[in-house]
Image (cartoon, rainbow, N blue to C red; front, top):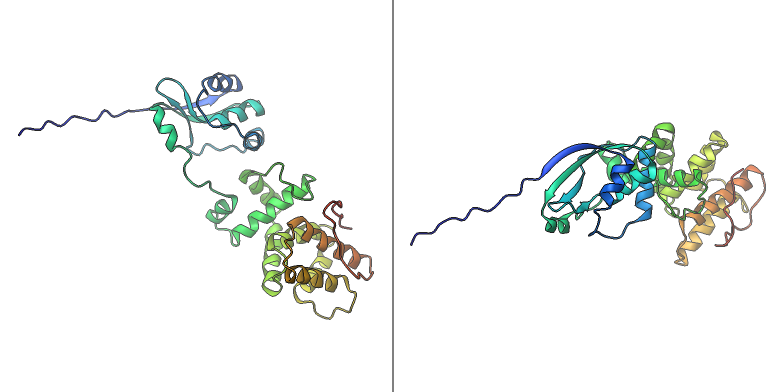
Amino acid sequence: MNMSIVPVQTVIPEVDIVTVTPALAKKWLARNSHNRPLRKRAIADYARDMAAGNWLQNGEAIKFAEDGTLLDGQHRLSAVVAAGVNVQMLVVSGLPRETQETMDAGRKRTAADAFSLRGETNAAVLASVLKRVWLWDQGDYKFGQNYNPTTSELAVLLKERPEIHRSVEIAVRVHQAFRYIPQSVTGTAHHILSRIDKAEAVWFFARVGDGAELAAGHPVLTLRNRVMTDRADNRKIPDYQHLAYLIRAWNAVRQDRPLGRIVQPTDAPMPQPK
């Protein structure tokens, strides 16, 4: 029996590199008739990178179907409009509409992944410390995460403040000796407090780690006892509260006064280091 082979029609999409203006982005967004809900936080993150000139052409494309429907890229295009700048983008058109179901299906690359690819040691701790330092500098002292820094913003912060590497090293070292405070919090606190007095920060975090030669009522001893009690009682302590404990102990040390207990009510403002 003779069997004929029916050729499968292959769709060959068109690929271009286009300078996308805010006006063009608005025009393309008008074709956005079949997509997931917009995430305002993602748009804001992208727009900050674009406005700062940190948006890189990484091969991810704006994608259109054969009928002109926008399949992928609504957040990036919305960010171009929000930033009010021109951005060069890869554009793929002529795709079957059903290919939209397979888009963005992979796991998002995290800031820790990006720093690891750069060869950074303790990349996860580094990314966490950078994020918290960035939020602190934005006035988000309790890390409410109404917005998040992008990987590019964290990379810029690290370039501006390479001493954060040292804060991460201290955090890892303290955690090896005293595993009751998250490394990301210790590293953040070390960087913030080192801005006030680098030499005293060295002594302070050494004592947080080893508790050596501390008399009853010493702020660092009170700090250590508090976090160990929290752990023994299975209390879930948020990062900002651990940071508040560290700052309260630091302020007491700086003022040369004993500290009988450390309390940080959830509705209390974050103490500021002195």
